[in-house]
Length: 427
Image (cartoon, rainbow, N blue to C red):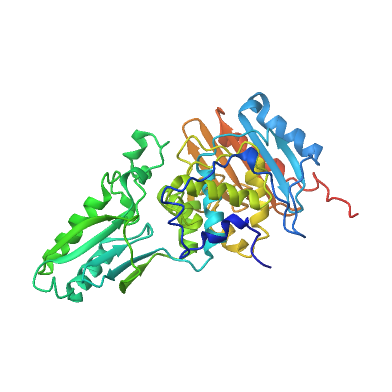
């Protein structure tokens, strides 16, 4: 089975193809949900139906949300695309970290399961060294020491052989370090660390590192000095840097795509999800990355009404999704050539990740794998539920519920009842 079809506008997204023209002031048209009618699904793949087809489950779920129905969106879909039950499924809501399901799907589709984020050491023709990165969340001090050692041994060029080593750190401008909608208080926390290309320990210690390039500059200089050398280290904007004439001296690769997806979905790591959105769409200009993400979603034939992608992690309260979109996304990814990689990245109820403490030892233990989401006033859980009648794709998003976990557990248990939703008769 080939990859899911993508819009022609997305063809240049692969890494290595030029995107500088788009990032150098050329106007990019604003993409809105209303300007992106859902494309037809790939031939032969199930499409999300719009009419509820299981009244018995619908009644049970309506009873579960009760008087709080106005603050809930719930959609339950089977493997054939039948919308078994739906409460406000087309109403846009703040998704919190369920947003990561979108970022990871795009990254997996566009980059593939063998992809690694890579940090590289280059030598320019004049002997100047250059370090470039792609936001490896696990870049650590041991790797920095290797870069320092290799820089010491590179020899530089004739103009610098008797003086300090000249090193350039290629980095994003500061205005791109955080999505604009992130709260200032969140930016000080480890979970709200700035998104940069060269990010030692994901730009976080106990709290966020407020100036990652300065930290990198200082630590690299200290390590070179410790090894008996000296270096003149300066920052270079990624928009002006080039490696076309440079020689690659060394590279450090991140964990595999499986590890990156698991960091984002199982552990809900914001930094990793943001990097995956940028790398997956081929742009660290977030405004352009968002528009390409919307194009990708539309190209999958997903319901786009009211949907707005603002960041990659869900920390921005400007994101809007619907439970129908999330359930349909899981249905689509279940048909993807890399479906197993996507499913394997999820937390598991009672066992792993952000779901490990939920429903442990209950009938849901090990039967649901998915993604949680929590910010103030928001609780969301979307994933794949094992039932006697096959897999169900369930999305539950609340914006203001009083006891959301209890409601979510009730919905999942009702969705597992055997025989409640008989299979659709063959035509």
